[in-house]
Length: 99
Image (cartoon, rainbow, N blue to C red; front, side):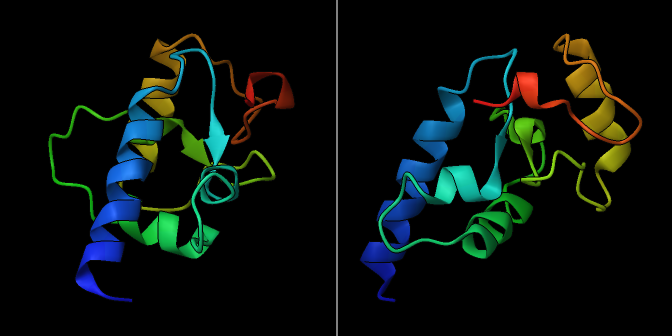
């Protein structure tokens, strides 16, 4: 993938992420389906490489089964989801919160 194409889909990804309602979540695959030639793993890698302190709501992107991903920011993700009013069932976001 050339640098321009990579940059273009990431810009589109960040725009989609920024527009995500505060009371909803989306899966990595859900975002990928909105971007041409992008898969869920590519979205996950892009999300993992967001700069520290970003204002994008990275915490609202979860696995398609509703589980919170197992990563270094998992505790912060959980706290941010709860602060957004998204109630968890254990380590899972109920389907009613999905876009």
